[in-house]
Amino acid sequence: MNFVFISPNFPHTYWQFCDRLRRNGVNVLGIGDTPYEGLEAPLKSALTEYYRVSSLEDYDQVYRAVAFFAFKYGRIDWIESMNEYWLEQDAKLRTDFNVNTGIRADRIGFIKEKSLMKQLYLKAQIPTARQHAVTTREAGKAFVDQVGYPVIVKPDIGVGATNTWKLENDGDLNAFYDQLPKVPYVMEEFIQGDICSYDAIVDSRCEPLFESMTVWPPVMDIVNRDLDLMYYTCPEVPEGLRELGRRTVRAFQVDRRFVHLEFFRLTQARKGLGDVGDFVALEVNMRPAGGYTPDMMDFAHATDVYQIYADMVAFDRRSLPESREHCYCVYASRKDGHTYTRTHQEIMARYGGDMVMQEEMPPMNWPQMGRYMYTAKLKTFEEVQEFIRYIHR
Image (tube, rainbow, N blue to C red; front, top):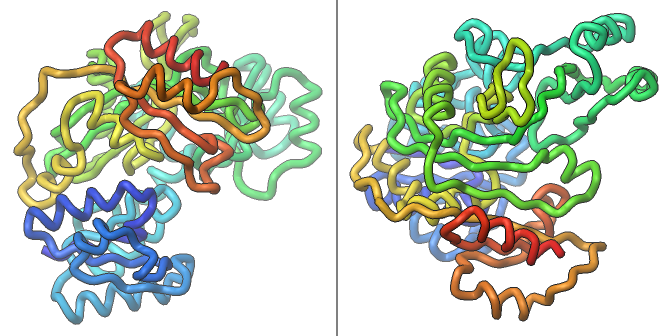
């Protein structure tokens, strides 16, 4: 089996996908723009071969790399990057090389465009916020008159809450239309709730081999207000989220993937959507959750999601048993320009025994993920809250 992995060195923990695939007898063929000598040793050991391109943005170069691998190793069975930025290119490559294990170009719109996502939610009768495709000022005002302030405006295609804003009154609305972005935007009613993700690895029958829940803050506020980030993976998945997550996977006809589906857990009842505690669909992401979240799932569930994924690819089943040792895994980060009470030495003295990761993040992640992060395993939600307060104080 030949698996082409696009940009296997980002995030740097993704070498583990390559390693587990290699252990399962898969030829892992990497394509990236980083020089081979710049790859970490574990990734080099996991790759059968690496093809460097000067730019992953240049489709012709990436196409030629895949064609070279097909000539040398035979038919390509999988093409994946695991990164939101490259999903459209992945789909085009699958189409051009007739690779059926994954989303192809004719279906990519439904996982990239929020307006098309909304259509599938509604068709499957999955509760979701009302949405309006941004056109004229008058149409936007009519939508606001229907749902009320505040509303959220965001790019139809986008990730990480970049260029996303909350409009709270007519002044905000007019300011938005006065400098209307040139890319397609959508406007949605504002939902008061916690953001919870349903993260899963699904097999060829759209059945989950692994399921997890992570609770997130509003990333829009983290970016726009320059706040510190915290989030945590939970020991268990609530039944309501599990049921909606599985329904969403079937509605989007997703198979043989690691998925990250976002929902609101209502903290305020919303007419037509649900009561406090109910889940409401936000958006789908057909790749693993960002940053080191897959590793946090490993720590929270005492498992190896990289191996579960590799077993799905190679055998279409899970070999690892479910663990009974579940806990919280919490991430808290710090940004430049903020002054903190506790030093790094004090943090490690108090939480060193619980710490599973602590390091500086890549610069491109600083606006969302913070510059320096601490990640710990903790038993109770109260401990999670105290850990966050201690890091951020």
